[in-house]
Length: 321
Image 1 (cartoon, rainbow, N blue to C red):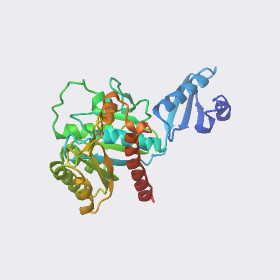
Image 2 (tube, rainbow, N blue to C red; image 1 turned 60 degrees about the vertical axis):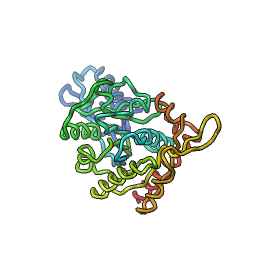
Image 3 (tube, rainbow, N blue to C red; image 1 turned 90 degrees about the vertical axis):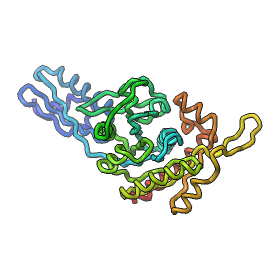
Image 4 (tube, one colour; image 1 turned 180 degrees about the vertical axis):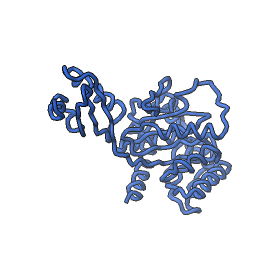
């Protein structure tokens, strides 16, 4: 049996992916083009090729090698400088909104000590698999692959890790098997510490988004985060003002418990784009708790995130050019 005979026994649907098929003694060696394929796709093809060729009388062993062109994957960091300003909520909803625009988006929950993405995206209790010493992201009903320390530790377990350990954990999440994912959103922990520095040194983002509430204290911390990205020569795509305005569900009156317009004014002062404002709204909080991001729905809350996503997509398109 020659190589052509061997190839003829490979299912027709897979044939376009076959780069070569050789019989060495009783061993069939097949090389598959795995460009753009997910881990599940690769597993399925490997099983199908192995079953098809392994059934032949003169084949004692089947080896399938996967080869792929390196995917040009871009990274956007989402930072705040301060905790509790809704950075994780923005990251999850931005990922879903960009996915709805047709982009292949993944989320890295880099908040090693306080991961939120499993809950926000309805993935609690799930565990990532490993393939070729790399983690395979978990994907839920919203179609966004996610990796988080929240998948790897017990919910109430506290991590007492020093900087190098946290940095190594971040590298494992970013260098995982992301398949055909084109864009990674990195949900950073608050502050400007070891995780942020490790990211800038090892995985320099293409751009960054800053999130803050309108109050002065949060703005000061956001400015520090902005300076960190500036020092790392990472362009800031724009600023998002969160928890801006609360509409009473009973009387409809709008109040501003955290102030109004502070982050937008800061954006104008430092000549950075203002991407939008997210209200302090009960549906957003309820959606986050239930793992159903508002960005997945055509609601006023969802449209707020969709508007930010459109600007980010435009920035990516211009930066690509």
